[in-house]
Image 1: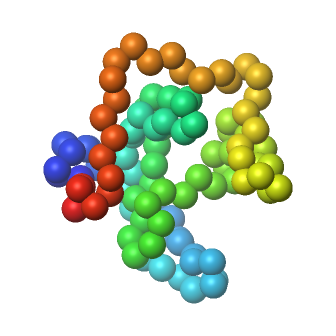
Image 2 (image 1 turned 45 degrees about the vertical axis):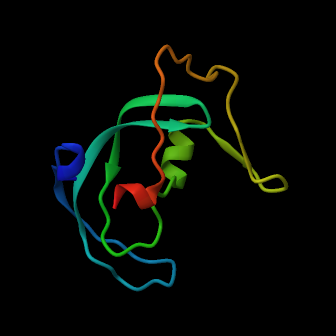
Amino acid sequence: MRRFDLKLIPLPKAVLVRGYNGILGVPATYYILVNLSVEGRTYRDCPLVILDSLSQDIIVGRNLMRYWRLKLDMSSYLLEWPEEMPPTPLFTKQIYLPRRQLL
């Protein structure tokens, strides 16, 4: 987090975390606010909870999908976006870095 100058914000209380196998993991105690881009749609100050010991880079869970009113098309593995949520116009160039360059 220091590398990107992100501020860790403490959660009001620790959140228990269970893996897909049901085993308890390390409780989550912090979150960060980021500008999150998903399929061309950018959301400012989106809270992401920091989880230890997971193999995923980011998890877009049911609560976030419900909040954005997203549907998952299982036959094509694509997200279906509501019509009132078109892609965000970009007026600047974004820089994408592969994960291996960040470590």
